[in-house]
Image (cartoon, rainbow, N blue to C red; front, side, top):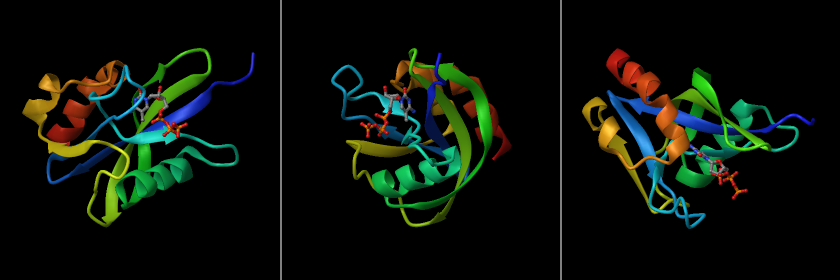
Length: 131
Ligand code: 523
């Protein structure tokens, strides 16, 4: 079996808050909130791919750090992994999402998350507690 392709997602925190983004597609995920990110292209590392996605999707320059939480199998082709991310420059804007939000620890549970991202809620709670 060939290796699964990675989808990298950003746990971007600042001042005790986490950045989340609302998907516009596919229809079954539209309106749900995710950690922003995307597929790692051939020849990219997860870090370069995530930096590129964050620049394209949100117009920001970021530094991608260590892995957060467990990997999540999406299907037989893709594996989803989250990374701690620090904002270096810019102010995030929703170029490809319908909205973005900064949320606090006590808001995590009530968000209408994309199902796979829910796996990281305990890790995200810990990350926000450390902030
Ligand atoms: N997820 C997901 N959670 C999450 C992300 C970034 C992605 O469950 N935080 C899923 C949603 C899609 C798949 O991973 O099924 C690919 O993510 P997508 O569409 O954001 O990746 P892109 O932007 O690289 O995809 P295309 O440009 O549309 O090919």
